[in-house]
Amino acid sequence: NVAPTVTIPVLAWGITNKWTAAIAVPIVKYSLNVDAGVRQTNTKLVQDFADKLALDGLYADRDEFIRKFGAPLDSKLAEYGYKPLANENATKLGDILLVNKYKTWEDAHNTLTLTNEVALPTGTPLDPDKVVDIAGGDGQTDLGLAVSHDYTFAKYFVFSSTAKYTVQLPDEVTRRIPEQRKSSVSEDKDTHVQRDLGDIALVQTGLDMNYYGYSIGGNYALGYKGGDTYTGTAYEGERYDWLGKDSIQNMHAVMGKVGYDTLTLFKQGKFPVPLALSLTHIRILGGKNFVSDPMTTVDFNMYF
View (cartoon, helix red, strand yellow):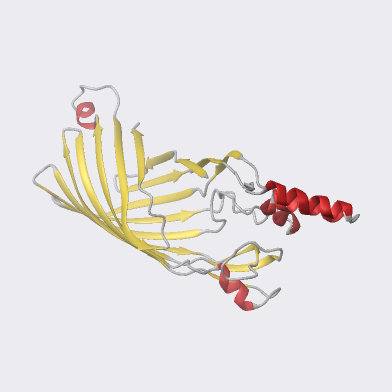
């Protein structure tokens, strides 16, 4: 049972009236609860078998039987060299994101913006010696480019559309190499696996209304991620292919958002600080190999 929470402080600078630079620093906090014991329905049968091994003088076999039968998962993981399963509470740094936004064109109703992003491999990657681990990041560099168009009409309404493409650069990682397609648990480890995660494409469109600080909006998004590829020379090529199984993803989702800001009041001299607070809810409508759990985020912005 895993319960993660991600907090992302963002600091943005208006370099000029058209150019904004920002840095986002994800912080992943999670709790991992483990309960992997065995509930025996016939303890007498188990005890009789253990006693028989002892009567036959097979004390080492008896101890091994009791240990493996009482905690088969822990025994197997120890045999393969994994770290023991245990409850865990931890906080990890995620992949830091550097963003530049540049307003390339603007008139009375239209705004065209270019955005480029660089995701740095600062997050704590997956530990190959843990059968269950929560990574802070994926351990490699991403380059993203987006084009956004905003159309303002009826004074309070904005219709927005965005197209974005992210390239995930190849790298080298340490991975357990599966012994079979249906299980990632393996005693074989390769410290020089060549990895290339699939690129990501995203398009989205939405409508927002802001009336003197009160805002409400909706958004639709369609996303696709290519398959991951892993290669190496220590084991058979097919086993590396199993690392990238089921990694092609697609999804379409809707987002609803409500918020309030004091920007209008601040400009009128009626509020001392420009602030903004919003609540966003995202629901996945469908897709493939994608986490379908709904997600709710709270954003708090302060301008200075």
